[in-house]
Image 1 (tube, rainbow, N blue to C red):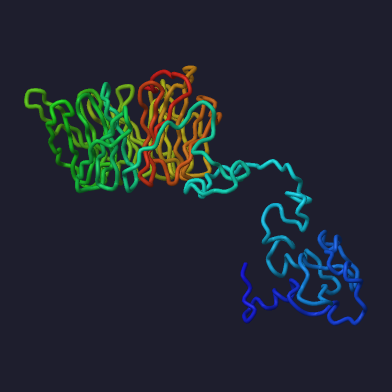
Image 2 (cartoon, rainbow, N blue to C red):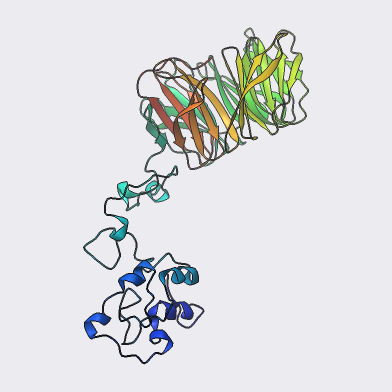
Length: 441
């Protein structure tokens, strides 16, 4: 802290030994010169009660004699009145007035307890503390997976990641209105498509790459390079999923639009519009001949794929339903209400909550995978810029991934690879330490 001797800090400067006499002007003779140059041991410990004290009540000698502190002036009082922790508050680690000790009375071999936060200086490449830094110098916590590489290029939130089966290309979409194409072998960006609108989601299905945008869905055939625009959505398309022979899109106006692919004309043709949600549909999932939709209206709707009718509405969440997946006979849902809920069918076929897992922050996205030992693991992105990995069904935490901003896109790849995309536009590639099995159905 710099002191302005002509301003409001003059009082603090004087109290720290910048001027004044001993004991408020006591005329008692001082100790010999060698004593005056020594700092009072009891003053350092905050318990000197001598008035006046023949030793210094500050770390360094003042410009002249007779500048010890008055009665009752202790280290505690310095802390209370100046806002500092003690006499060596500005010296940093290792300074206690004795250069022979690296950490003074705090111990020379102190164990540094890491906080679960990534060091900002390390991110910028200039942290000087090294292993002694109390913040993490890595992007993850856990031993069963590792960061392979980072793909930089997007300038805003990554909203979708797709890895077509059998392809050597990775596709990422972003709110920066671009779709980027990455070579899986080199990690280099090989193409950038400027689409003129924010990308809400990306889906790969067979030869088709499908991109949700405001008021339309773009469809590219990556084998023939044919493309078309599917009109009909009102507002942003947040989610895409394929069920039986239909493509479903969750839209901003609360409807779910469906198209059927016509092989004869090589086109997607409008098939149905599912209505019932009162606010935007932000997540869709297909499982067990059912379509599940989660919405900003805090509900989950269950639709029959046989007749496209809503057969149940689930109302247990108290905020936006952000993501849905199926695992065996269970439905998993997450919400900004800080919970992950597990649903199971009861007698009669309706779903009921069987377990609620609570987080400290809103939950943004879910993804399921099997680890190297074929155990199911839930990837759970939270609103505190972390991705938590949980063993199922116990919900025992086995690791954590950190990001600069929230992780909104997760994608499973072959060979134990998975991808995460965050709010800064960074895409990270992760790998299980040994070969896991395929992703959850």
